[in-house]
Amino acid sequence: MRQIFAAALLALSLGCGAKADAPAQSQRERDSILGQSRLPGAQGVQGALNASDSAAARNARLDSLATEP
Image (cartoon, rainbow, N blue to C red; front, top):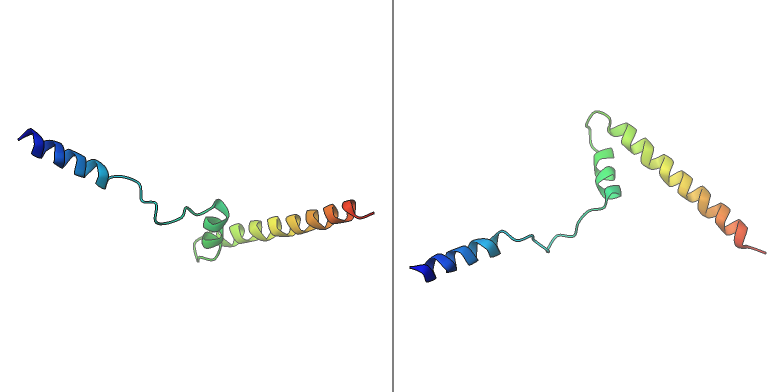
């Protein structure tokens, strides 16, 4: 009886483990999906992502200017 109980407990504990098949989404990916939806406030999220992209591109251009002789 104890062996059956131990086997059942082991099977339950293995079945409740985290799945490693699906890669975790980054915050940016989740925000992008939200920004493309029709939910209230989605346009604001998309606008913030666009502003972030613009700032990152500008910083990259400034960094490349600083490294050139």
